[in-house]
Length: 296
Image (cartoon, rainbow, N blue to C red; front, side, top):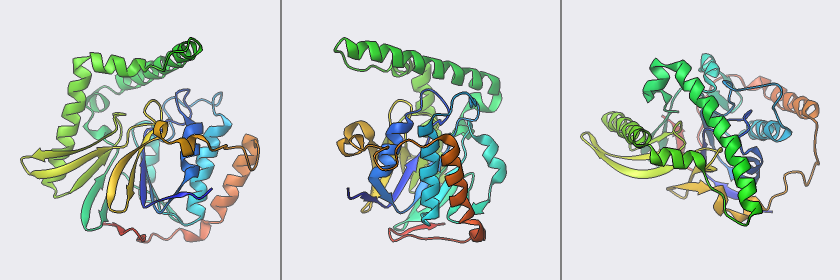
C-alpha cells in the first residue's frame, strides 16, 4: 500500500499507558502516512497514571514506530505536556533527528508558527495540581465506563456516545474555560507576531481564525487519541484536521500482518537497537524539509 505523504503532522494527548488510549487506531494512522516532520505536542505517555500492570503491546508498538521514524532521519520534535512533564528536564536534548523542547517556533512557507502544549495557561494546573491529577483519574474512569456503555450500545444496534463530551457540553464552566484558553493563547501569539499557534491539552480539535487586539491569528488544536482520534496535518500549503473515524484506509490496516505479535521484551530489544544506531548523531543541528519547514 502506498503511504499518503504529509509535510508535517502534529499529535498530542495520546496518553499511552492509560485504558482510554486508542493506540491501535493511532498505529494504523501512523502506518498509513509518510510524514516529513512530526511534532509530538505533549501528553504522549501518561506518566501521571502510568502503571507497570497496564502497558499493552500496541502502546509499545506506537513508541517503536516513532523511534523508527527517528532512525529514518525524519525530524521529530517532542514537546512535553503536564502528564509527561518530567521529560521537560531534558529540554535541549537531541538524539539524531529527535529533539526535546518545551515550545517550538517554526517557519512554514514564510508563515510564523508557535507550537506548545498549553497547560501553562491552565489555572487549575498552575495552582491546584492535586485537583488536576484527581480530575485526570476521574476522566480516565469515565472513559472506562464509556467503553462499557458503548459495547452494550453497539450490541443493541445503537451508535457510540461520548459521556465526557456530553458532560463538557452541559457544563457552562467547561465551555467558558475552553473559550478563555483559546482567547488567551491567540492574544499572546498575535502580540508576538505569529501567524499560527498550535496547542493540545484541552482535547478539543479546532482550526479557526481569531481577531485579537494585536491582529489576526489562526488558532489550531490537534485534539486527542482518547475520544476524538484526531491530528493536525500540513500538506500542499494547507493545514487540516485529520480524523481517524473518517479514514477507511487507515482503519483497514492490519497492524500485525507482517510481523505478527511481538513480545514486549522483543520490542524493547528492537527499540534499543534502533536507538543505538543514532548514538553518533547527538550534535544539535538545524534541519529543514522539502515542504519548507524550518526551525525559527
